[in-house]
Image (cartoon, rainbow, N blue to C red):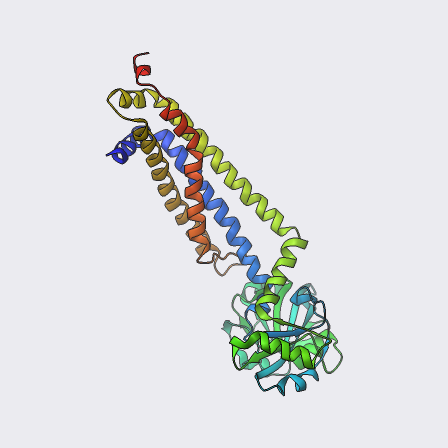
Length: 373
């Protein structure tokens, strides 16, 4: 009954109700949009680690991010592969390159060289071609989203990266990295492009026979290779993301904009709810004169905030879903984990309750006699 009264009051004063709903929509959409871009950038930061099938990475000492790893002797593979719990170990080589287009323009890329594209790491989605193209000596991949940047190359077209001739062997789909556009090739061609000494690589990827024994595996590899950093893929991914967030100011920028969005929403909700109570002061006084208790008024105002919150959250997530759909497969990084949406909805709902708390205090203090003034 009290909830029905709250709904009728909201429908009676549609202008004030619409302002409150818009405030909630702003919270959900603006904060959600910021978070989706941030999570999308997270995926780009550690894309090579996250898409590898290895549980352990072997890098040079004091590697803070995957992109800061130095060169390792590839001969370390013999020591690692001999360990009984290791399923396989593969080298990977990556570094910066300059892709020269047909009109002479240079585009920055990150060249990734792999030995076995069917095992350690390779492009995870293709628009044209397949992983087998990386086994060709001069074959490289480019991504569909970057085609125009490269001058619209086609399969088997010849280009140059770091003044080294390469052939477009496959076109990937949405394979991008934080350190630059990803260009995959075989490790032999990558050494030629990156001018890397023979027998050197950036990291060794290790697949364990039993992924549950990762700590034991790391300890065993450290024992045979004490002068390197042996780290789990999950930890390296987290370290890489944390480094970029802290050292590039990205975390502060997105955190500040998200906080501002939340504060704006709280202010809008608080002002509109407070104004609504002032405008409906006589209505609440009439309810008090008719026998409504303070708890009844409290429940009515609380129900109003919940109704406004539910409508605003629904519409806000609908707009956010349209944004995510529109940016899917585009150069703009946008991604929303499954756990983030319920957290955003719950936080917004709490903001609605918090924003209407001042209005509640005003409403429950209204005296029945004020209706006669």
